[in-house]
Length: 125
Image (cartoon, rainbow, N blue to C red; front, side):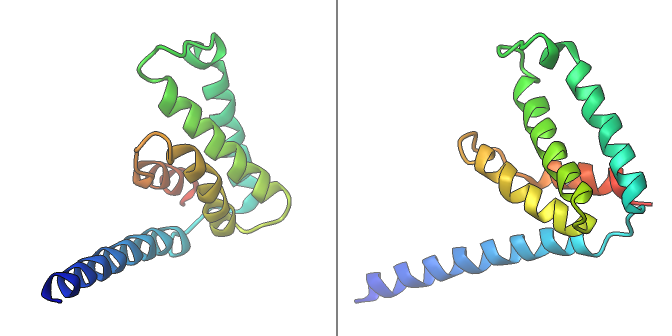
């Protein structure tokens, strides 16, 4: 009985920690002071083009150590860009883009914090 109780307490501790982490990420995204949508699309288009023209991506150098990061960043930025273009707010586009990108990251074991910090810094005033 005691072991079952401790197991349940541990489960709830991890559950709460996960919710707090997600809340912190959402707070970072929602509370940022963003540029306007037009500026955001220009900034993202510039970054997308830069990544696409990077020889590691352009030449499909899958074995290069930076390829996975660049590919994930590209997918994330394209998803956010498309969200803004169809009229979503920047925070909504980032959150929805995160959901798309998290599907990719699930297989890598990498966390998404770095990507969120990068895009919020890029699109903030």
